[in-house]
Image 1 (cartoon, chains in turn yellow, red):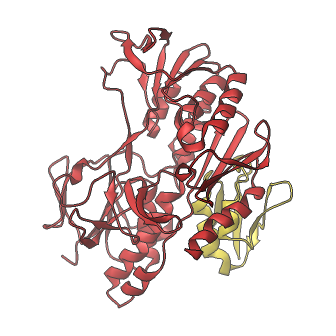
Image 2 (cartoon, rainbow over the protein chains, first blue to last red):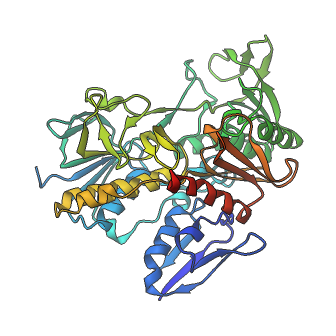
Image 3 (cartoon, each protein chain N blue to C red):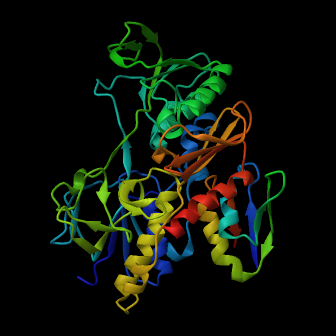
Length: 63
Length: 405
């Protein structure tokens, strides 16, 4: 498993992470980010890409 | 020299992402990144916002280091002066020659400056050091003159106003953000800035700067004077290509590259061992057409760095995968964001390609809104204020056109 943290004080809900890891991140009906705090190892590459594309640099994988 | 490193010139986001992509592509040989700034790669969007308003340090904006690139050699605070593509070397300001097996050009942009004496009080916002120098002067009551009404100018104006400064924006256009967004949205953003007390002097150019040792104000072309304590020059940028002047590369507006980010010479020949990434890469994006363009949006250093790293990694591997990697398409979706006061703006595509004024897609201008930017009958860009998920079908529409053409 990988652990995922999003700094919600930074997150602007732009949703770029959703394109990279749609099974981990989503925008809800209120345009707010929702995400899984834990995901399968097979999601690691997708979540790494989500880390890269976040303009607020709010996402990190907890190692 | 197969034992020479891959040398990446430019230690910002594009250089970092290229190094990471090289490792991802399986390249285990040496990588050297040479950067003029003293800081390890950091995220620039906060420079016009949080770095000015909350006094955060480099740590808060630095990109996280990854284990895969732990053995990359970083030469920070080191400026490359020239390159010799035949000898496969670059030369740094200290006179040292650095051999390379492959070269990645990632030197990006610098802020354009007024051609006037560098007196106290003149600022720009391109680097972390720039932003830190400016924030020391953004004191409550300080009179701040922002020259330029693009994204950087408007964001700095909003931040300075929130800090209690008196802010005047001077710009030659009829509205702020006129070229990227069009007149209607520009006028609406001006209105929102004015509600917060920002003063605009639009359609005006600078005829003189006042102050002998310290900035005192600007004289405009209508003879009026805008008095101020601080000048922020937000008048665009210039490409850092001077170190490549002696090469045969095509340096017309940045550095020309093909869709694999390989550098192209003035004669049209392509180098498999020289790549261009980030803001200075002028490359074709078949999502729109075959015209090579520079794109200064935030996602481009990452997208071009990943693509260049994958292609170069395959070339270095020499295992026959190069042609297959080259043949993959490269159609990155341009994306950008801006925060000014309560306005949260998000955009996809290239609104600047639009012919004519944008069309209203959703909402209305005075509240949350989405505008569509069309070339011929085709959607080439969408800009939203206060909308997020509602923009995604339009993003999809922009991308699907690419697949069809």
